[in-house]
Image (cartoon, rainbow, N blue to C red; front, side):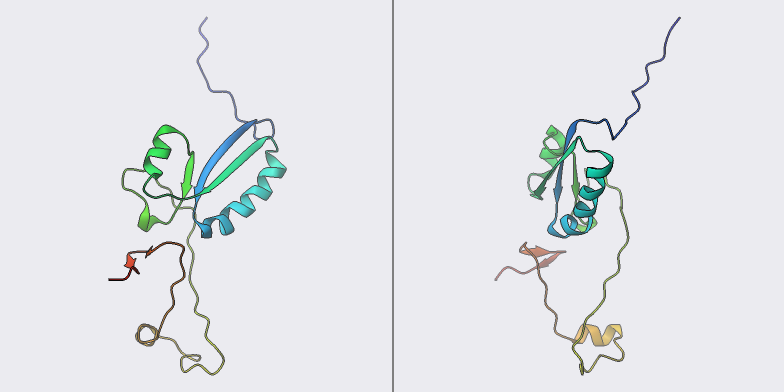
Length: 132
């Protein structure tokens, strides 16, 4: 009699392992914090190691297994990596009371306004902020 080889069913409540994740500061706040709360409840033996993303090293880290996954934006994902969209999001604008665009903010008006970009990186979604 032959028995087909089947992987053992995964039971998160019984798992004893470490998952290594590289994540942007945004992903740490939006994804990792809620994820850790749920993991403590449903998989208490699973440890999660989180580190900042190093884009220069990311493909090699995933290839050699020092990282299990990375949470990054699609714009910076290397083509050689398998990727899956986790969610869609929308951005909103916040304006001070009395701002000229507070009642209606169309695309042309938005483009004419001054903007601030906050990032831990020198390149933000294709915008080079380094001095020339």
